[in-house]
Image (tube, rainbow, N blue to C red):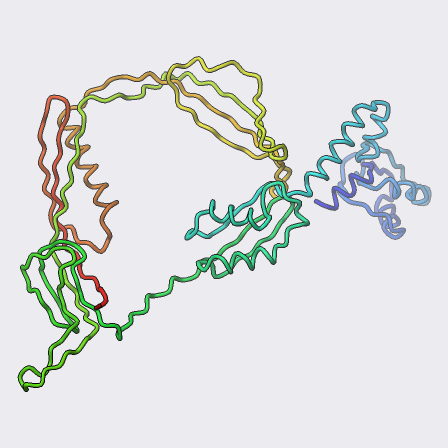
Amino acid sequence: MLLNFWQYTKGYVRLRVTGFSVERFLNMAAYRGVYLWDVERTPEGVHVNVTVKGFKRLKGCGRKTKCRTKIIEKNGLPFVIHRYRKRKLLMGGIIFFAIMMFVLSSFIWRIEIVGGAAVSHETILNFLEEQGLHIGRFKHAVNSREITRELLNNFPEFSWADVYTRGTRTTIMIAESIPQQPVIDRQTPVHVVAAEDGLITGIATSSGAPLVRQNDVVRQGEMLVSGILELGVDTGIPSTVYVHAYAEVWARRYHPIEFAIPLSYTEKVYTGRTTTRRSLQLLFAGNIRVNFPRGGISFDSYDRITTRHQLGVGGDYPLPFILIADRYLEFVPTVRTRSIEEAANMADHIITNRILREFDFGIDIIDRQVELLQTPDALLVKALITTHERIDTQVPID
């Protein structure tokens, strides 16, 4: 691609070579150092591309091989300039456009972050802006190695990072470190207490003195296993020992869920009428948004869908122009009424989603009881979720 661009800049012609010694003509041209490309044999002869300078050196080859050459195409920047040399305004616009493209390509117009799920991209972008990396920054003033070092020093969640710029796009590659397993200090004396209310179904103690048994009801914060042991009571020489109590305590817990589903609701009925308003955001001018001429929105109720597309030349050269399209979809708010069966199905769906969202995967759901109460305007839902889960936690001994 770069070679084609260079040849277009210098200018080249497409020739038709005819005669009885075309192969000899091509060999002689190659021997004299004339670069030929896109050689194609046709019923009319051989078509070949050659630079303007090389074309002048082919005259001797044609005389010696008795071959004739004819120009069938002229391509390249020199021919374009010669063709429009009298249109000064057009040529000035082309030159101005080329200068502007060169200037704009010296700045960063897009920043992409790959990886780094443990830290939000907004947090990373704010940190990069503090380090001097932001949209509109002169790319040759960015110290990628220094920014990489600062990322690793300020975010312990990252094990590796790389910052590189191609064209006008800067990419931040991030790899996260494996979370360290918590270190259990077996030397610190602790009690085991209840983290939640529950009915104990099982307790397995490895150290400490258990204070509760199966089928006991405990409250949050109540001590389950003591880390204080009284020794030597039988010998008459009592002594107190502080240990790191540890136990797995399982309990049955109950979680009430209550909500109401209205029987009357408003639904959006789309009419199919749409309109689109477009605008152009200029990143180099303080994110100014230029709206294209268009009438106002005549819809009373509508949804808006916004799409953004950054213009660019190739994948690595995004430009500081973002084309924004706001699409408006008209709808009519319509009052609907759902049946009791539909409300009951919706209630079951809501309860299932709340269980998936609010309960960890390590918790066993052993029962779900749902009570429905119909009123003139809504369906009242009362659910009781029974779970089996661990409720033990450790607290230091004062």
